[in-house]
Length: 268
Length: 252
Ligand SMILES: Nc1ncnc2c1ncn2[C@@H]1O[C@H](COP(=O)(O)OP(=O)(O)OP(=O)(O)O)[C@@H](O)[C@H]1O
Ligand SMILES: [Mg+2]
Image (cartoon, rainbow over all chains, first blue to last red):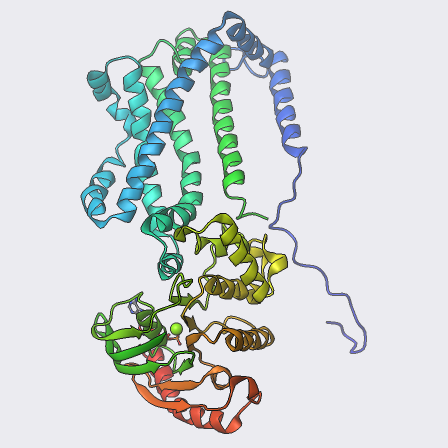
């Protein structure tokens, strides 16, 4: 590595990069800088108040929401629909997914139907659901249920198809019961995929609930945003959007927590 | 327990993998099966263990397993097949849970097999924390836990480095001395077969047939580390088959 034969030179390190250290302070800093830019942009007039109100105004909108009790009303209404629809959709989806994954007959019967319904944008079903279930809660809960059901079914039986066959062989070779193999091997092996699918369906559920509430609701974050929009109250509109972002973050955080608890065998 | 493979053939699709295999495995005997890659050794073992159905012929067992035997035909796998979401202890517990044993009884068995495989300190480890040798010890411990009549081993040491596999081979030999289990032991390592086998079955390339059976009469414990003469004889048997098999695989 050097001109002269007998001269040693240190080999330079080239294995760096492509790795992330935990820089806990970076993202809050970026956040605060953006907030400050926004604040000074608005107060100094670079950003028109018609386009974007000051951050403090958005804060005031939040405050109003809180004081009038509307926050509780709207968030509560949305959460109730979300939690009911998502939980039911997930549970039913996992059950059907398992049936498709484990029984050839069920797969032959249901998999094509699932494949046919899966790509329909579920929001297109809202008018139909309103006719079937009425304008109230039922149509919205069912919409979310439907929207989370199909991705969950597909993710679940996909996960089962991917379970290491040699582990199933192992169970059979020790004469474990069918139920034991299903519960202790197949279910646990597909859990990572099922949990990561939950992140996706949580996002889908939030999209659907907002869309449904924008179209037809008196309560709920979507309805609140819709009202704010029609009044050109951008501060309130932004407050609603921030609430949605928080809901998504909290859902993600909860799923992450569940993953760390249930999948502790995976990470170091 | 004593096993007899009678006239067994097996095809996958159009591929004839095993052709009219006849084999007898006596009580307390280790039968080593060697043969070129792809000749159907693993298939034969799966057939013996009831994980696969023969197209023709049958596999028969004679003798009643002892009453504390939970799983007469028990596998030890080449790739260990441990559940990554269970600790060492729980991996062993897995194969005991379906038998209605009391918890204390189960723990007693687990403690005993961990001691016999020198794993006592590792009972709480996750499989990902273990070296290959340790993983296979868990595989062996798990097999011993059900007190098998016949151990079916498919290249149990071939995923390990040579030092580790030597150590484990000695441990297996000691275990056999104590328990005198019956076993079918598949390997591609000739000297391993000569060390641990009472009988060595040489298979031809696919479609697998039995080419020759060699009996080794000396006590397993007394054997030399190597038996060059026998090794050479077996190698001569295998070489042409192995080369031809290699050629066929490459041209598939
Ligand atoms: N489930 C299966 N379906 C189709 N073909 C199979 C199946 N299992 C094995 N085979 C084929 O049967 C042949 C024998 O396979 P087997 O695994 O028994 O060989 P082997 O002697 O154990 O080989 P190796 O020494 O590489 O382990 C191979 O050609 C393999 O591709
Ligand atoms: Mg094999």
